[in-house]
Picture (tube, rainbow, N blue to C red):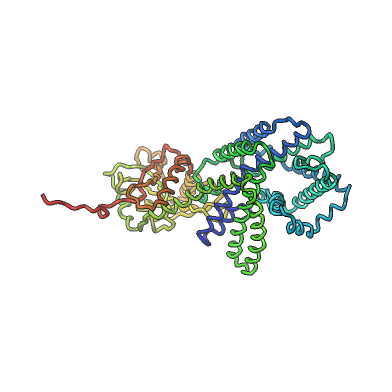
Length: 572
């Protein structure tokens, strides 16, 4: 999608294909967010655990929590400056991994037999603990989804070229650990960490320091990916509106305060629950990514159908990748009682938020009544010229959800004409359409009643900030410059000085009426939605509007007319 990756970027390309596709998209997104909580916990913990080899009595938990706290505190300042060190540090990290592994590999070249797939197949088929082994192997794939999410920042070519080096260094290190374990079968126990055991004596502390920096960088990638994920979910109406900051001008540099502290608290809780042991966290780690992999595979298959890829290739893709991922899912489910339940619980809680927000919007849209706007042209024109009605504003702006220029919500007409008639020189209708392309910024203008009623349609990508105030003012500037509109105040004292008229936005805030007919499930969803809305940004703040020129009118989801009420008159 214009070089962008991530499950919501993929979903935006296929969402119109079938409504049910929102389910794998939400499942994958929630699993990735859950992984954003687990990754900093396990990576930092596993790095710090190396200190126990030199200092057996060291307290791991306070050190890990301190590092995690600092990591999340600095997010608000942006990572632009520090980010420049990430590349060189990761190059050093992977080089050291390769070199330490190569030292042991050179001692026993028979380890290269491990490349023979016979041994892997034989192990899976004959070993009684094959499923548990597969679950452990799956941990090698974690990080791939974070890389896919940051595809737009990294670029496909950069990933492909750097992966040649990264994979070579990783394999050398794995082989070196294998040689160590073969040479120390008699003394090897689960308490021994072969990763640190192959580090030459005297370099352990340096290795722990380097591993900690690498862990922080890996955690930063997941945190950044989580911020991007939430910003996309907000634009796609899959998450409550939250404040999104831009600490630097660099593309993709965003900061979501609420998610930052949610992840921080979640990470600390994970460290405390699993008592600062990375071995205990492994069960929770793989399950989240496995769910994201499966969801991504489903969406990719649908995307292939959209691109008219031959059916046999789509089926082959699903069979090969689906079988692998289901096999790993079965392996990871064996860890459910050993930490996997934590991932499922976190993912489920996040799912209820996304699903309720999505479904509630569908319920609200069901009660929106549209009318033909042309039927009200004459009334609006006469109201604008009626000096017996006090002027409400020179320029009056309404945000409309009507997709067609011929329609308008009945509640907007009611607000203009009946609920305190609002006279204005010009009425503006602003509509925002979120499109599949990530960075689209387009608009078109329709003069419905020349000089009286104007509609602006914005087409914004799902990664573009919906700052309606700035976008609207930019359009006004263009129209004034082209001589298409005149926003000069019509008050005589101001008009002669060419002073611009005032602008006012009117937002309609929907609420549940006791007359709104909903099923038990729908009312539960709507009640949950209104609870979530209390903690989300208001409409004016989410659209970048200053509350000093915004009026919010509360309207019920459904109006009750006298015809809807059964009432019998008794004779006197």
